[in-house]
Each structure stands twice: as structure tokens, then as C-alpha cells.
Image (cartoon, rainbow, N blue to C red; front, side, top):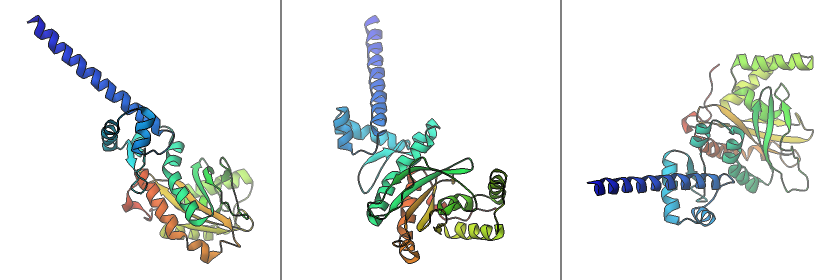
Amino acid sequence: MNEGIFSTEGKSQEKSAGSVRSVERAADILTCMGSGEKTLTEISVELGLSKATVYRILGALRNKNFVSRDADSGKYYLHWGLTGLLNAGLEQGVVQSVYPLMEKLWRLTGETVTLYIKKGYNRICVAEIVSQQPLKFAVGVGTVVPINANTGSPGKVFLAYMNRHEVDEFLNHEHASQGFKPTGQGLLLKELEEIRKRGWAVSYGERIKGGSSLSVPVWDRSGDVVASLNLLGPYVRLNEEVLLGYLDLLKECAEAASIRLGGSPAKFWEVNPD
């Protein structure tokens, strides 16, 4: 009888040890992917695990929305479920999800691509890929720009998806901090309504003389606009016709980025009620 008890305990300990190893391997895979997107083979080689083991664990992680797989490149990346679980590192999670789409935009347009998030009463550039053209504009990661009446297309995307009370709060803050109130507030509100309906914003020389920018929102799984994805360049190359010719591509990339963050396609370009 004692031998039977010991045998059962031994099997239980072996099963427990196997479970711990699986958890450790899953943690190793998530850590490995923390530096960026990777293929199954790259993860396998980096961790010294068989492809079959990595594939099995990735399948389990995908079921929990901890990782996802890009259909075009075949690479795996950390997904919104992990970000939601940790409830931290939002900026890093947004950048990691959107950056591959920024690279796609940059390759297909040859122009500077930027990504902004909203912090307080400002927008902050958290990622940028600068054009390789001789004549170009660059912002710089970490650049802080007030969200106000003259904030440019990235800021107006944020304003457009706020309710009227929030917009008033931002404009009142501008009045208090800058000592003036923007003229033509009625025109601004009308412009924001149009941006919200069509789902994009554009500006020419509003913040940067001679510059053109086109911006679209990026949503998260809560249906909130968490970022503004933008094309930026000189007007002599990006006039109205040329710039708006990139609109469908920009919106396509923003939708793909939103899906990576758990956004629902049904909510894309939906008009938010006041």
C-alpha cells in the first residue's frame, strides 16, 4: 500500500514539474517577443526549444489573446490581452502594435510617419520613421505639442473624438495657460464635427510652415482613440491631391493597428455622440 501511495505521489510531482516547465517556457517566449516581432523559427532558435514546443505554447498564448500572428509576415507579436492583464506599459504596447504598420506606410509613401498619444492637454510623439527624401520634415520622438485650436491634424483627431464638454475643457485650458481664447471657435467645432464624420484630419502649414500632414485615429478594445497615425511632409511634394491619395492606405494601416490593439472593426470611423 505504501508503495502505491509513493507511486501516486511521484506521478503527481512529475506532472507538477511538467506544468511548471510549461509556464516557464511560456514566460520565456513572452520575454523573447518583448524585443519585437519574431517568426516561429526565430523564437525556437533564440530559446533553444523545438518548433513543435514553441508552436504548441504559442497556440495556447494566442487563445488567451496574449500573442497574435501577422498574416502577411507570419511573425508573432504581443497582443492586447497581455497589455490589459498587466495594465501597464500602454505607450510601449501601442507603439509595438502600430510600428509594423508605420513601416508599411513609410515604405509605400516614402514620407515621414509619426505616431502620437494624448497626455493631459498635450499630444506626444512616441514613434517616428523619418523620410529619406532630401527635402523632408521630422518631429522627433518625445516632442510635446499642446492640443488646442492650432494643434495641427494629429491634435485635431484627438479633439474630434472628444465630447463637447472635453473640447471646451481643452480650449479653456488654452485660454488659461496662454492668456487668449481662440478666435472662430464655432468654425473649429464645425471642423471637428466634419473630421469625426469622415474619420480623418488634414492640415497645411498650420504648425510647420510649408508642411502638410494627414492623420487618422487608432482605437483600442474599449473603443477609445488611443493614438493618432500621421503622414508628414513638405507641401511642394504633398499637395492636397497627392496627400489625400494616401488616405485609403493610411486608414487601412490604422484599422490593422486598431485590430492589433483589440479594436472592433464595427467601431471604425463611427461617429461618437456628444
